[in-house]
Length: 337
Picture 1 (cartoon, rainbow, N blue to C red):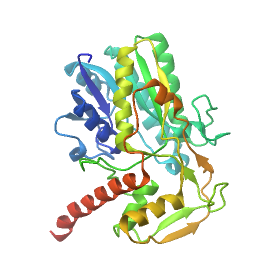
Picture 2 (cartoon, one colour):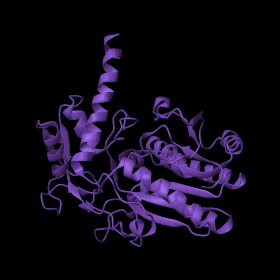
Picture 3 (cartoon, rainbow, N blue to C red):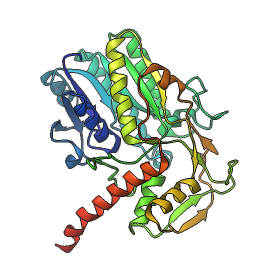
């Protein structure tokens, strides 16, 4: 293992907090930089060092990099709600692209050798064929996907000009929670289907909306590739090992299971796991939703020793449900006080 520590941006958020756990469990020293606008300080494992700062705060970020002998950055900080990116595009280009540029510049200035980027399948837009491979055309249909693709382009150019290599992992639909109950998705007003469904199952919502029933899929509802957040976090640690072992190579890889489930499949799983029936309300399609979005994950399987450990829809739902119940239990004393 290379000497130094890993700086995790957005490490107080959903995916970032799971990556922090995976790094710590693998023996890495971790320093988290998070502005805590959407993240939670309590979500950061106490074994890590938390610095509350914006990633475009060059002085704070560079001081952290130098003080903690940072050799690698895992970059999760940013805005992630697709409809919001359409209504407020400048927010996404500021938070995702401009801020990433500042972070990359700080990494170069401090001699950081490796950079792992939280990218997205939204870079593909509406794919010509499914499953989607990394050489598929990148045609984002919303500012969120474009803001991530622009950061990928910056990383390619920086890696060509400076002694830094990178790995961009294009996530598909991330879901679930840490199997040990240490972290999960805690954001208020989340829009991810499994999060919404387990909120409905625990009484936090009175129904689940299904947007579109006329897709070209077996049951008419949209099909997506759902990856367990802990499997995704493990992929980041393997990607870091690869960047260290092969410092001259950079990579862009899909992070998914290569298997799709429809909206109804997911809600059926929630009904099974909870032994109750969620109220499903069918609504019109949302603009730009593809019929199906499933990863061709052959590249990540060939490149990394990563193998999914939690590739089971009921398991993903069960972990998400356990976390949702834990959040509800924590909230109850606050309501009573």
